Amino acid sequence: MDAQQGGESANEDMVMDQEEAKHFQDVCNAFLFYKRDASRDLARMQWNFNILKPEHQNLLTLFPPEAKSEAYDRALDVNQNFLISCVVPHQELFHGRNLRDISNNGENAARTPYRDVTKVRSTLRQFVRDWSKEGAAERAMCYEPIIAKVKEYFPSPLISAGGATSRVSILVPGSGLGRLAFEFARLGYRSQGNEFSYFMLLGSNFILNNSERIEQFSLQPYVHCWSNIVKAKAPLCTVQVPDVCPGDILLNDIQVGSEIVQPDFSMCAGEFVEVYRQQIGAWDCITTCFFLDTARNVIEYIETMSKILRPGGVWINFGPLLYHYADMEDEKSIELSWEEILPIIQYYGFELKHFEMRKSTYTANPDSMMNVLYNCLFFTAIKQ
Image 1 (cartoon, one colour):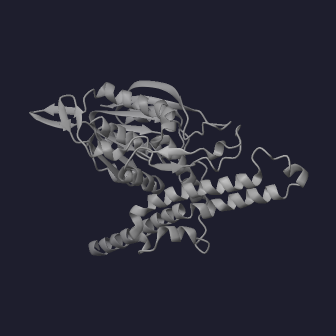
Image 2 (cartoon, helix red, strand yellow; image 1 turned 135 degrees about the horizontal axis):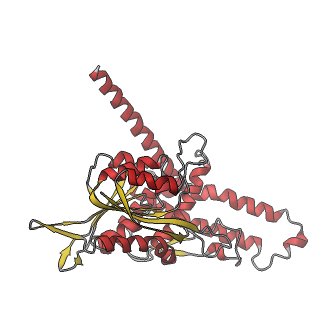
Image 3 (cartoon, rainbow, N blue to C red; image 1 turned 180 degrees about the vertical axis):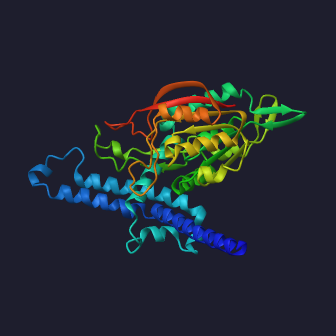
């Protein structure tokens, strides 16, 4: 019976590996076929302008439809070039085929699911949030308060005990494109980002490991946003990334107090609970930013954080409760209010030390007439 169960488990793992590999390939394809998919929107725009009667077309002189379409097309090229670059580190998946040729000849490839089309476009905006000077204001709303709290509880990244020196360890689940986890490593902490989305993992791997200089890459991330704008050409704005070169910092020694140390930074792929639930008492600090509401079961997230923090460990949270799976028919989703979550946090051995509501945007378009301003939970809890 044991051998049979072991065989079944191995078969399940093989099937899971195959499914994961296919999903990763699908995400790479969504990056490669970005322009093909976006061109449908461009064609619809052109058609809508073309059916206007001449009298109305003649009124559109500030940014004539033909010029707008050409600018739109050029912006798609800019974004496509960047997205191809993100896939290049995984060229082996394509068995020696040229990625640009694949991208340019996607007419006969399977249509990208709409959810993946929107995730690619969201990834472009995430690059603005995490790795551009334009994203600095938004990072100041949510990352800087978290970093300040970490410094409050761990003024030094170094821990000296029994003649040995170690680092304060910080875990950043839902790390997205990796900027917050990178900032902790930059300060000398032992930092690990954890991310489940292959869209984010493709992007973070590229920007962290392939950037050679500041503002090396160009994006036009708002080219799909033609509603709610004041200036006609606002959707065509160009953003340069990264605003800092990660390699310049992570590959060189840094000074922490009187010590010279190498930055200690890593990224771990996988679902948070599955990856970390066995790491009992392994972490000094967990920081969650716009993460708590990504749970199908937020109680399981809280339970896992309680298990993996050492006694006296610190959990710092910033974000809303916009549960990601709430509107998906075939997905489990437990949606709880803060009033319900607080006693659960306490049940799992946390003492709330600080709580306030803070406002923050998330991948906001500064030129848009409509942006969502979240009223976020910002709290610090200590594992007893």
